[in-house]
Length: 267
Image 1 (cartoon, rainbow, N blue to C red):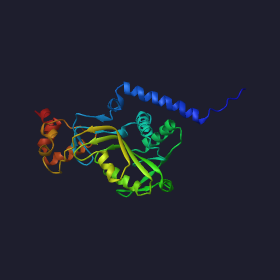
Image 2: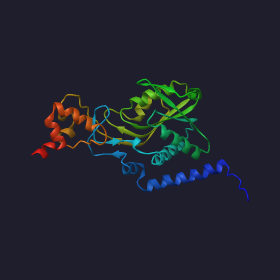
Image 3: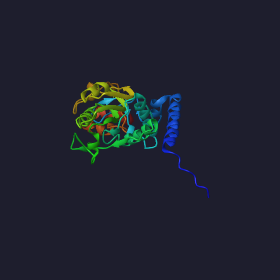
Image 4: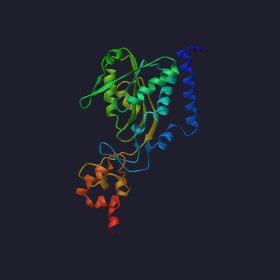
């Protein structure tokens, strides 16, 4: 039986890289990444959500809702943007833990586009707000050019803390890319946040303007949230709307019945 010679790695990289670029162009024709994420239920707008820190808003972005296969187009796009930026990172690192899978895929596709294998460094959470390098990854980070990856920016607190940790690890240069920069009164935007940890370059695949109204606990929500004031139904399947309604119903049962429509059912 005739034996076939193994295809050189460079040719494999070039072939797969070409297919990835073709897919990116096809995505643009179909409406781009935003339309893809909306179709997958990752970006939901014109609704009424309660966010992790209690704010009320009209846009919800859940990149974690994508499985590893569905995440591929996002990673392709981000890897391509980093590649054409000319930064040439030595390694990709994620803000733990939400962007870990994304970062590993970005490292893969960046290797395909550039033709050079790139490392994927790992960070660990330490305590409430701290970080540490996984095993000897911190030694490699010293003097390296790193690309820090995040999925979604809501307020940017975790990103800034992580960015400062990475920068203080002795990196030579640092860029930051996110999938979605969810702009609101609580988020000044990635370029401003990047200045806090001295990012050499920042970029977002999507920038979405979203409302984020602070609703203090124990206060009538209609005073602080216009969506509550107008009676816009609250989403209880995504975000923290269900927990919010359960808590608010004890202090403001009339509001609870009104916003959920239970008062109408009892009429």
